[in-house]
Image 1 (tube, rainbow, N blue to C red):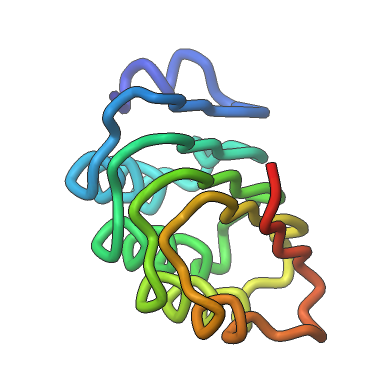
Image 2 (cartoon, rainbow, N blue to C red; image 1 turned 60 degrees about the vertical axis):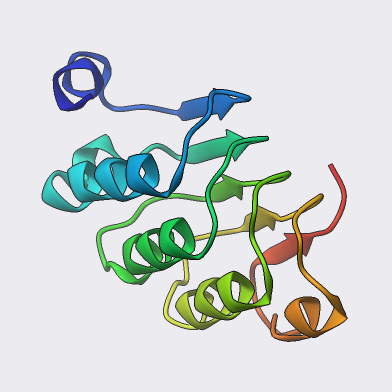
Length: 128
């Protein structure tokens, strides 16, 4: 993956839609981004895939990184539950760059949605 990203950097947008991206793939992708922040896209979309808490923890680590330029994180229709929401919400407290995160169609309950701070600069979307 890294050579492909290198050839196309800097990326405006990177999309994985219904591509079977699971937790292990999200971890691998985030590892590449952490090693080379120049490869982090402005918009990352991983939609209708198969990642959950492990992928959320990896994405949270990326969002906490001071070198993360990502402005939009579009991760609808995955296996994100309340524990994943907590990881992401905590990461947003340390991130001043992300402007929007879409979590529509995940497996979060009202408790998962409540963890997102209403005062956050990041818009949290429940709809596509």
